[in-house]
Image (cartoon, rainbow, N blue to C red; front, top):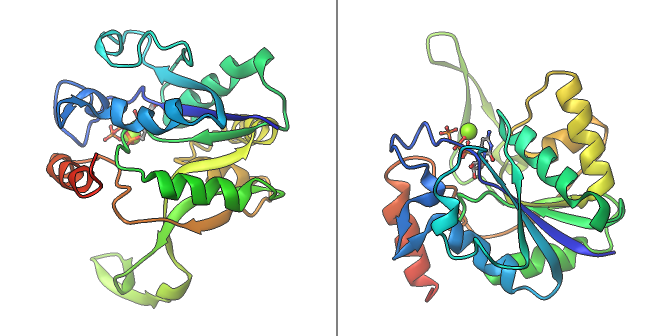
Amino acid sequence: PALWAVLPAAGVGRRMGSTTPKQYLDLAGRAVIDHALDLFVADVRIRGVVVALDPTDRYWGATAYADHPKVVRAHGGAERCHSVLNALDALGTHAHAEDWVLVHDAARPCLRPADLDRLIEALIEDEVGGLLGIPVRDTMKRAEPGDRIGATVDRAALWHAFTPQMFRLGRLRAALTDALAANDLVTDDASAMERIGQAPRLIEGHADNIKITRAEDLPLARFYLQQQGR
Ligand code: CTP
Ligand code: MG
C-alpha cells in the first residue's frame, strides 16, 4: 500500500492571538507550515501531500511549497475533523482504501525525521495504525467543581497525543464520517478510530514535537529547530 500525507492547515489560531494564522507565522525565516511540510515532501516513501486550507486563505501562495508538484490543496472546514475529511476526499481517485495516510498538524514544525521513521516502521504492518505521543511527566489530578482535586489519576497509563497519526485511508474516512454524523467533533484522528472500536497504537516520540498553540510556543519551536540543526 502507498503512503500519503495530509496536513490540516485551515485553522485561525484563536489561542495564538495573532491576525496571521499561526501556520503562516515566521519561524527561523520561513513559515511554520514550511517546516512541517519539509519532511513529508522530501520523503520518497510518501507519494503525495494534501494541505487543507481555508477557502479564503491568502497566505499559502507565498509559502515554499505552494507550487510543488507533490503538494495539492483541499478546502478546510469549520473544525479540524472537517478539514482532514475534505483532504482525504481530495486523495479520492488517486489512492486506495488500504493505503496509509499520515495526518500531521501544519502547526507542528519540529517533528524529527527519526520519529517519523519510527512511526512508519512500527505501524506499516499494523492492523489499525497509531500515532506519536509521549508519556505524561507530571502528576495528574482530576478536578472537581471549584478546582478541588477529586482524584489523582494514575500517570503510568496517560500519554500526550501528538501527530503524525497514521491510519488506513478507507477506515479513517469512515471513522471521521461516522463521528461527524454523530456531531462528535473529534480533535484528533485517533479519537475517530476509537469511536468505531479500534485501538490505535501509541508510539513514543520526543517532547519537542510541540503544536504551536500560544505565543510563547514560537520561540520554543525556534530553539528546538536550532537544537536539531534545522
Ligand atoms: N485546523 C484545520 N481546520 C480547522 C481547525 C484547525 O485544518 N477548522 C488545523 C490547524 O490549522 C492546525 C491543526 O488543525 O494545523 C491543529 O489545530 P489547532 O492547534 O487547534 O489550530 P487552530 O484551530 O488554528 O487554533 P485555535 O484552536 O487556537 O483556534
Ligand atoms: Mg483549534
